[in-house]
Amino acid sequence: MRDPSFWWRPRSWPSLVLAPLALIYGGVAAFRLRRQGATAGVPIICVGNYTVGGAGKTPTVMALVELLQAAGEQPFVLSRGYGGKLPGPVLVEPTTHGAADVGDEPLLLATAAPVVVSVDRVAGAKLAVERGASVIVMDDGFQNPSLLKHLSLVVVDAARGVGNGGVFPAGPLRAPLDVQLERTDALVVIGKGVAADGVAAAVARRGALVLRARLVADASDVAALAGNPVLAFAGIGDPDKFFATLRECGIEVAAARSFADHYVYRASEVAALRTDARRDGLRLVTTAKDLARLGAAGADIAGFGVTLKFDDESALRQLVARALAHARQKG
Image (cartoon, rainbow, N blue to C red; front, side, top):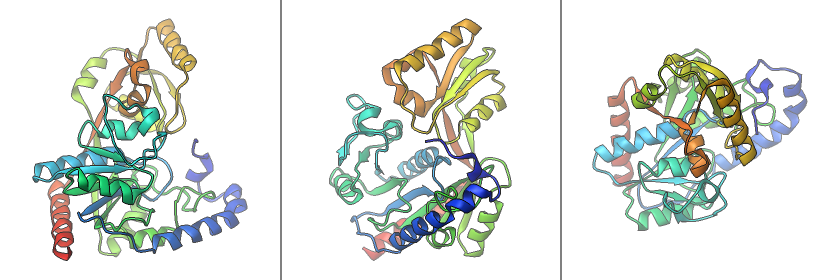
């Protein structure tokens, strides 16, 4: 689904009308968050966000996996596999699985590390350990209480923050903010903007680490598109962020098409995009996540990848090292 626009504006009448439902939803979510999760036998690091929709979790997971591998760890990613039909637990095989099987994010993450998809996260963690995981990185699941997390990194977009501060459906929050803040070990603020400054200050007051990071475009992808006006399209949490990134890299976005997060493209829609691009002499470009979802249908479409760069990566390394040592000391 697409985020309602009122989520990202100051409190308005739709938020007030939906407040009773938000109170019920938030109460249930808060109750679940306070439950004690099961142990997996290895440290578990969770990358989540406070709100519904995208905030930069996938590139954060990729950066964390790279950091762990450089430290000699064998990280496995654990994902619910949103958008896929397989309940799991299953080890993702990029050569045989498609987005319809396991979801787009697991396919993308499987290029960096082994990925287990499982609706039952406890069963998924068990499979990861059996296959040799020394540490599990949860892609999302911050609000899911089934597993004990040794480190929780929460991602927030600097330009969007937490919107109107309301709990779903009155706002984008997945649970009351104060309950989520209690369980935040570090906040990762991505990009430019001041919308997340309030929540960053609240995290800092609790003594948790606040890290700043930015998305950096793949140089080869930028070079491949240089001098070519494009028709850009995306079915992610915040398509406008993708279009803005292209423009910041000097790429002329002559036309843009936005789709809902995790959108499953119909063949007719892809054909229409190609027709529009040919008619106007434009190159088709989309995100790496969308390209993973398109599979063979996107063979002639340019992908645009990004990586996450931390302003203070040493602080992240130290935080992760302490969390791993503490988890293993406790057994």
